[in-house]
Amino acid sequence: MLYAIVDIETSGSQPANHGITEIAIVLHDGKEVEGRFSTLINPGVAIDPYVVGLTGITDEMVAKAPAFWEVAPKIESLLKGRVFVAHNVNFDFSFIQHYMVQAGKRLTNKRLCTIRLARKAFPGLRKYGLNALCQQLDIQNEDRHRALGDAMATTELLEKCIEKMGESALQEMLSAENQEQSIPPAVSVSQIQTLTDGPGVYYFKDNTGTILYIGKSKTVKKRVLQHFKGLDVSAKKQALLREVSSISCTPTPSEWLASMLEIMEIKRCWPKWNRSQRFHERIFALISFEDQMGYVRLAIDRWNKKIPSYARFYLPTDAYQYLRDLIRKFQLDPYLCFLHTLPNEELPSPEVYNERVQKAIQHILATRKTFLLKQDGYLLLVEQGLFYGMTEDRGQEIPSDLEDIKLQIQPAVASSAIEKMIQTSLQSEGANIMFFS
Image (cartoon, rainbow, N blue to C red; front, side, top):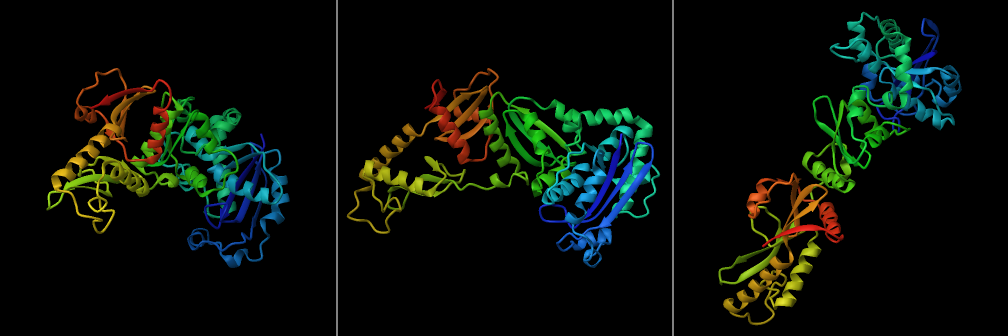
């Protein structure tokens, strides 16, 4: 096989916002080096000071260097018909592909990651970064963090892997290229193979076990692989390629349940790359208390789990509209419900007024039910009209006392999206509901 061992230096970590400052390509026929090419490149943007310190490449050094589009034809001709090899290949490939597309070209090379290759050829090593491998495998690299020095070191690593495993092993890896070479180098293929083909929730974790991203799909394995394919130069994609060390999933009986679990898990774990759903939702509650004159007063306030409430809402407009409807229906006084600053007329006696309030409370309790919903092999508890949490339905005996049931259920963080899903499910035919008085 013919190989092109590639290394690049960049002004930063994201192709969409940073440029290539240097590229080196070493041509190899599987036995020996056939040729090599390297050049500085003007990235068109300022080089990050940290990168300057790491590589030694300054803005002054690249000021008169060619732009990428000027060397794109040369790069295309060197890579043509060869396997694209790099240490953490998806990083180098995504950068080069991004700028090749801008130059009106597109790479179609098969890719080979020498991190993944080294893990197979030399299992059990302490680390698999290029510098660590050079030290452990006695590979000389006197020009670290420069494109040609790292490309030559990667070439020697490739030769050692071929010598250890044989070129047939590389051909095997390349035959499964779409699945294996596109996923992050620290993720094993066996992890991908254990993912369900059906619905579920999946987790991307770093090397400390910290959850980076949570997603859901009706076809988990297919969706996970899609994360790492294609020309996506977003910050999230690049971070996932760099940081993900393990992938796992929780299969679910249905896509509906996967959506529920995804929301619950994001609210519980707050992964840093689930930015669109990482927010605290404000909850408003309808509460009551007795004032110094003996009036039982209804009020809308921010929900506090330590204070009993009759109903809860995600929008203040919904909460106050609900209270106004109670005022009209049960002849309550807006002043005693904190909607007016002054009473409109003489107040009724506390005894008369409190009887109206009690009728309103009984109406609330009768209409905002507490119940268990059986759905897709799970028991979902709804308390006072709002989702409390869920647990797997294993055919266990359901306690008649609400507090006993709550002991079996992990409370969920409040979410308006979940409330909407439950309401939709309740409106479907054949909803299996167990009410609590």
